[in-house]
Image (tube, rainbow, N blue to C red; front, side, top):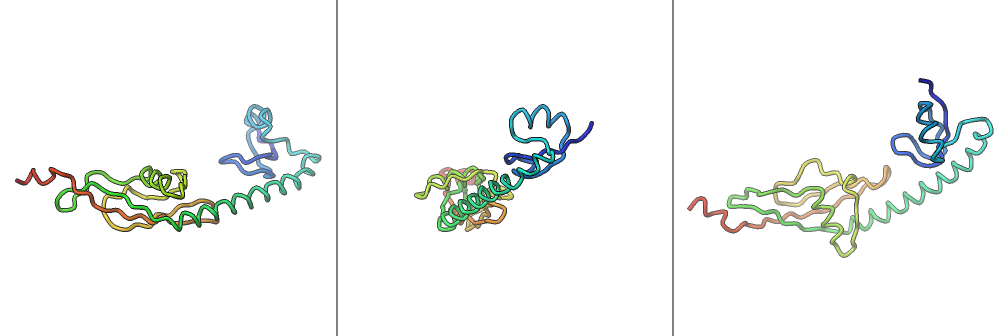
Length: 162
């Protein structure tokens, strides 16, 4: 199947941002991008409009960077505490996941609502202690969530030994 060149009018996940000239399959362009007004054909006349699209893109990207910087400053100031159910000897019953961290950030006084996909927790936390969890807000902006995990001893956990 033949490829065609199109100019994107807006950001398309996995394809590019506005003012990008991309090669796509003819059917994808004809059936999806062009009818929805997401892109237009890369003809000589349309290539002249590229400057206005580049200005729009620069404006959007600077606004996104500014917003990410503001959120990063708010996240860096926060310290959250969570409890982990533990039995005798420090054995954990359960774990702290990305969802738990996200909900704890939303429940803070600042009320920061983060997308779970940007919280970069490699594996669920199954121990107590202090953790710095990286958050990728923007390709140029990264911050860290400071998490304190305290033990919560489960009642009746020591009855198995008695």
